Amino acid sequence: MKTVDVIIIGAGASGLMCAIEAAKRGRQVLVLDHANKAGKKILMSGGGRCNFTNYSIDAENYISDNAHFCKSALSRFTQWDFLALIDAYQIPFHEREHGQLFCNESSADILNMLLAECKQAGVQIKLNTKIKAIEGHFSVSLENETVKCDALVVATGGLSIPKMGATPFGYQIAQQFGIKVQLTRAGLVPFTLHVDDKEKFSVLSGLALPAMVSNDRKCFIENLLFTHRGISGPVVLQMSSYWNQGETLTINLLPNINLREQLLVSKSKLKVKNYLTDLLAKRLIAIFLPENLLEMNVVDLSCKQVELITNCLQQWQLKPNATEGYRTAEVTLGGVDCHAISSKTFAANQVAGLYFIGEVLDVSGWLGGYNFQWAWASGWCAGQVV
Image 1 (cartoon, rainbow, N blue to C red):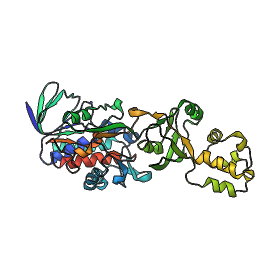
Image 2: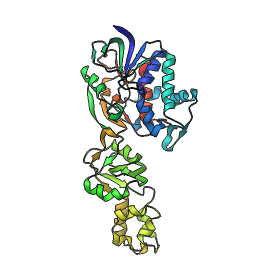
Image 3: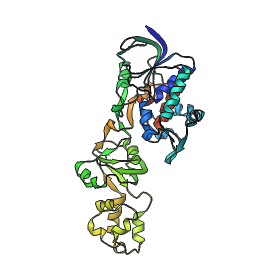
Image 4: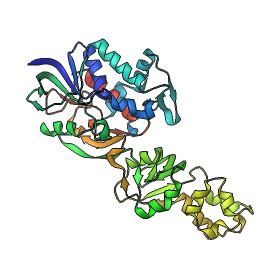
C-alpha cells in the first residue's frame, strides 16, 4: 500500500494552491482528479482570460450561512499576495470595471503558473483517476491501488457546469464523515422567463444596456442582457445569488437619470418615442410603452402619463420563471457547512486530518474574481497546516 502525507481531491484552483503550499513545507503531496486535465474551469473562466482576482476584496462580497467564516483566510492570503505570484511569472494582465483583473492573453497563463509551482515543489498529480472508496483515517481506494495519507483535503468544487466534470462527490465525503451540507443551488446564473414574458421580450434578444436590479435585500447596477431564454448579463448574474424562487425583481432600465423629473420639466415638442430614443433602443421602448403614449409630444404629457412612463421603464416588475440552473451557473451556493470547519486551518472540527477548501464549502463570491480569490486564499491557508 502506497503512503503519502497529503492527498488532495481536486486539481482545480484551490486544490493546486493547497498542493503547492503543502509541498513547499516538505510534505509529500498527491493530487487526484477524475478529469483528463488539471484546472479545466480555470481555462474556461472569464471567456478564456481568467478573472483571477479583484483589486477590492471584502467579506461583504461573499455569501455564506456563516458570514464571518471567510474573513480569516481572505486577510491572510490577499489579492496582493496572488498578484505578487503573477508578477513573479511576469503574466500580463489588465483591470476592467469594478476592479476585476484579467489575463491579457489566456487563462492558460494562470494554470501553467500553478502547474510550474507544483512541479517545482514536487507535487504529484494523478488525472483520469476514479476514487472508489474513502475509509478510516485515511485510506483512499483507486482503480488499481490504495493510498494512505495523514491529511485528506477535499477540493472538489461545486455542482456548477456539469459538462466540465462537476459532481456532488465532495458533499458525499462530508456526509460520510457526519458533516452537514447546506442546501445547494445555482448562483451567478441567468434567469429564464415565463412563457408570456419570453414571447413578449424575445424581440429584444441580444440587446444589452445598463440597469439596476433589486429586491428587498440587495441591489446591483451593471449591464443587463436580453437573451432568447430570458435575461442575463453581469447585473442578472449578481442578483441571481440573492433571488428566491417566486420572487419579483424591480428593474430600472435608466439607473443613472431621474426620468420623472426630466419629463416633467421638459418643454420638448418631440414625440415621446423620439425623445426616448436618445436614452434607450427603439425596439425596447416599443415593447415597454403603449402606442398612444409614444405618439404624444413630451410637452403635452400629464403628470399621470409621466408617472406611467417612469414606472414602465424605471420600476419594471419582473417575476422570473427560474434560473438556467447548474448548466450555466458560475458558482454553487451552499455546500459544506462552515460551522463545522475551522476558519483558520480548514480542518473539520470533529474529524482529525480532514480538510475542505474552495467552492465545496458554503462560501460563494460575487461575479468579478471573488471566487478565485476564495480558492487561492482557502487553498493557501490549508496548505500551511496539512
